[in-house]
Image 1 (cartoon, rainbow, N blue to C red):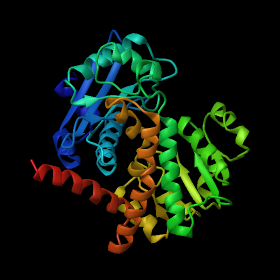
Image 2 (image 1 turned 120 degrees about the vertical axis):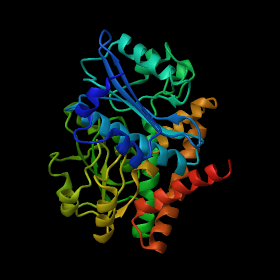
Image 3 (image 1 turned 180 degrees about the vertical axis):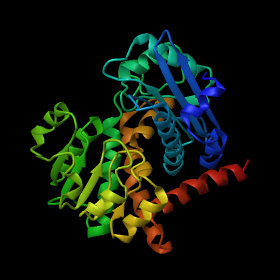
Amino acid sequence: MIEVKDIKEVVPQTNLFSVLSNLGHEQVVFCQDKEAGLKAIIAIHNTTLGPALGGTRMWMYNNESDALNDVLRLSRGMTYKASISGLNLGGGKAVIIGDSKKDKTDKLFQRFGEFVNSLSGKYITAEDVGTSTNDMVNVSKSTKHVTGLPENQGGGGDPSPVTAYGVFMGMKAAAKEMYGSDSLSGRKVSIQGCGHVGQNLVRLVTEDGGNVFVTDIHQENLDKVKMYNPTIVDKDAVYDLDVDIYAPCALGATLNSVNIAKLKCSIVAGAANNQLEDEVIHGQLLMQKGILYAPDFLINAGGLINVYSEIQGYNRDKAMQATQHIFNVTLDIFKNSKANNIPTVDAAKHMAEKRISDAKASR
């Protein structure tokens, strides 16, 4: 645990409890083990519907404040994601501060697993950006409260194909709403980020007849999608492209005032979490510009659906069937948004919040 005097360094000029109250978090755990090289934060946002399930991200943050801000936003998004997907789960997330290419050790993840275990099942972890199924194996040596394990250990393996399929379903629903057909044949789609999810999304869109434009900061990721013959563009040029659909599939906050002003697309539908830098300002700005936004926590829920199914006995076919339902929910969100003249992100949040409030009222 960090000492109270260090809180000011994590959240400069801010009362931490005010931040947690405003965002609605129940608990935040700071984890530190100098010998193992572990510096991590676990954030539990809401457990009304069930235990908080969310992945562990490993990232070299600029500072602890950025790490805390990220885990708070991500865990809150997981609450919405679980609720709107109809899962009996709450929202939680963890971040490990470190370089995933240099700082990983078995001991680090086993020690992290001990911190997860200390929460007695209130938080269940899984893989995320910078972590893998093998890392979750090491976590599982210290706790049973872990998903995202390899298939040979009863897990679902890499959840990225299921996540990508959910994004694809949301994208097709947006096309149906905007163009009258869910086919992506002939549509120009820019995919920002070709990690595991982005690679699978490139494949799905290409197979559906879409013309794909891709960008990524890592050349090896671009090399992995060359077989689909996408057009490769510079990372800074992706916002200016004249495309039908922009799919942010890297890190969040790309939908800010500067970038939205550049967009020439009519749909935004991607896999990244927390795409809106400010939910109120930028959800409204997209609507004013006539851009249909498929809320990220809705359409990227396939990965959560996949790891949730591990808890009940994993079956990939059932996970894919449940993920396919994202298409219909997305259409419902668009309908509610139009009927109430509110941004799609607000319509999605209202749906998620209602399920949580109904659960509280029924207790």
